[in-house]
Length: 184
Image 1 (cartoon, one colour):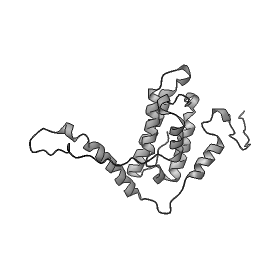
Image 2: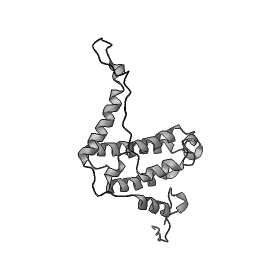
Image 3: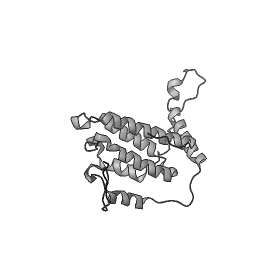
Image 4: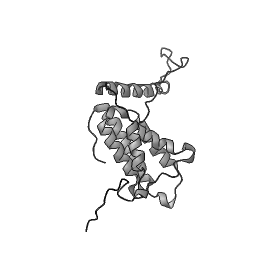
């Protein structure tokens, strides 16, 4: 017999297991601002391509054939563009945990991290241009989870790492091509 849940102003299913309280999520959404002019998909693609080009240019000295005719930019300081910030939701999650403490309190058992991914996906689908830095933010969360020490209550860390990386790739792919996200 399926159980029914009632809405009482708080989370309707075991509020202690959720990553966010409804009030925290509401305040995050209230802090989001929508601009009247939104960048087009082409400008988002060009920003992504520009970041990729810069990353590739760092490898040029390693690919050099060391001939005298090659040009070198070793004497020139490189101006790497600033990476866009993740959305307010991911900034809040990343900011809640001290990087030196390796996300010690981030719950991954029983798929609790999925609430964050699904909430982020809903926000991303509503306003994709506001999430240009989220791919890097999700990858940062995955890396932090991957590096933290193993404990019995963290047996699902590898699944969470894979899920955060997958979502990071999905966000990056959508921003590059404009294709819709697939289901996890």
